[in-house]
Length: 404
Image 1: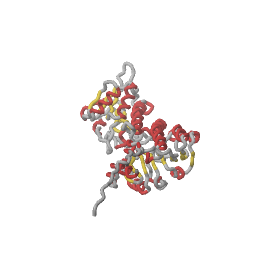
Image 2 (image 1 turned 30 degrees about the horizontal axis):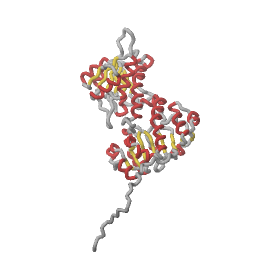
Image 3 (image 1 turned 45 degrees about the vertical axis):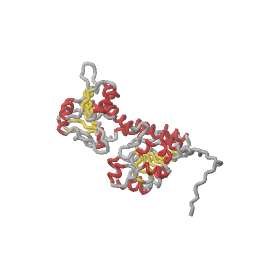
Image 4 (image 1 turned 135 degrees about the vertical axis):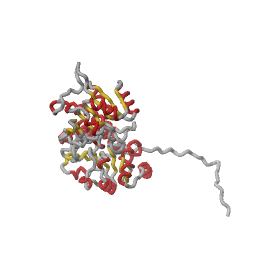
């Protein structure tokens, strides 16, 4: 049997095909719900009235549970003026396609979630429960976390601004507990002419450490910074732009400095796990009476051995006559500033999502946002969570590519 060969005639004309580009779809209308947070000590709200007003003016709908902005001193009136619909039932808020929360999804909220919902909230890895995660997976939820959300420069904008708030607040807090009003030893942070400056020790040269150092220097204190990363110490030195006392964490040097300081700040960050304890109980017992310890790393266990979690209602305790301030979530004590900074990140993201025609398209166009997604249509896409709870991990890039 003879096989016919392909026949090419000179009279054929070959033309190049038109190139098809990835055409952006038309914008969509977003239905956004903001519930009132009931979790312990959460005063922040994820969208400020100004942000809501921008969203509603762009044709999106915002449904807000009554008193959701109260912790950040925003009234229902502020939000209704901005164009939000105020409702009194949580269920109505949870009927929206997109939920924006300033605290993680809690046990009593899980049943209110509807299938295929999109949630933007923090995760708080340390207190995440497996059953909550599994139920969200069952409901094919897509979830984006504050902690891992990255911007175009590869930084985590929300974590960064929360760290800036915590760092700046540290010295204000220390100042309160050094004054007589709060049974402190009656020292003015900073000092004045003719009196040696207050001595501040900061352990950790990340964002919190940098902002604590800036505030302390601006108040006139003498600042000494400890961190095991030479790179971070150099970066802090360059960012502040003046010579500072910096040192690696060497127990004998650190212990000696702590003996004579007035304020000690724990600002070590942990990569995923517990913060290392670098100040032992013995070191704390040798500190001067009335010294103030502010342990910002208490969110991840704390870096002082004597630290124990305290609350905004009862923020301090004394041990060895040293005042310990160990409130987790310091930014929640400055809820309005914190809400505005979260809002500044989320509002433009929402607008971009609407312009791109929904979340799935946004993820396709904006690769850096992928690091923040820990659930995509019910598939777990966060490696740490899958390892911790022994659940199946799926690569998000494969999921997205398979849907195009």
